[in-house]
Length: 231
Picture 1 (cartoon, one colour):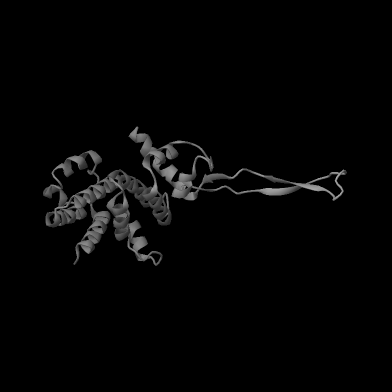
Picture 2 (picture 1 turned 90 degrees about the vertical axis):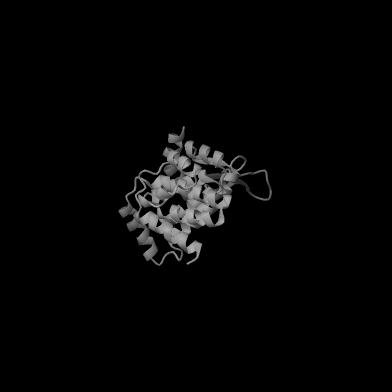
């Protein structure tokens, strides 16, 4: 079995069976200083697998990937393994998605720039497990996280704006947090008796504005408490 298949299986086993209650970001930093202490890693299948990969390759990239996986997992400790297994199996057993949840998460976490984004993915995956968002919206949210600048994401999540302008918020639109607000226009007939050609018409329209996309709304609702707790 290839290392990719090993890691995919181990992340799935971890999500479905492992007790993650004691896994915290603070503990994770200590844990990674010695890069995956074997005694602890054995209790978490995916970390045990990554330790084996690291022993073979010894690359910084593998170490950084392990750190991203660890920070992702820290957000799932309060969701019981039994509940995680039920929700994940429901997606895996459906015909809606060709890629299994465990493998999809590896793709998503690998694309994260750093462990901070991986941690945010963990927050959103927790929201999915608690059925606050659908799996489809979780995937959409992760696409936004991959593209966004975190400083601007934090500002977006903590503010209460509902309408945005094209002059100042085009980045939020390109990331998928916003969509174009419905554009209205109409022709107003103006009676002008001095105009020999008949009546004149005036075009009335609203300004071109953005509003929250469904994905942007889901991100704001499910990341707000996370950012509040960081302050």
